Length: 116
Ligand SMILES: [Zn+2]
Image 1 (tube, rainbow, N blue to C red):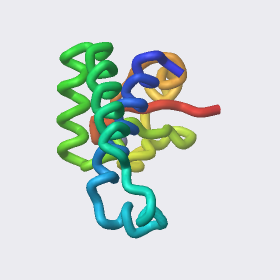
Image 2 (cartoon, helix red, strand yellow):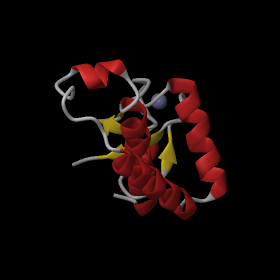
Image 3 (cartoon, protein in one colour):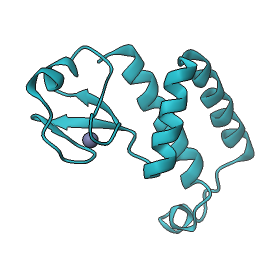
């Protein structure tokens, strides 16, 4: 997987972790007795911060925009030649490029990755 895609995926995971911690649903699903410690939250925030410094500012802005618009699922899997975020069929050439390059879906703008 493209290194940039990997970084963005990791960033998205941090965002989900930090958001989930706050929700009641998360606390209700078997985590009543295990409250995320302040130490964990601080660590996760620090690691997220470090990660954002590795991302090109333009790319980071794109990421934040997509996260804001869709509330998650910023980096999505290509399923055959379909975007896993908005389900449109991608041009074959673009779908092929997802294997090696950082590519955005022309319809929804999400970042695409391909798993064999
Ligand atoms: Zn899409």
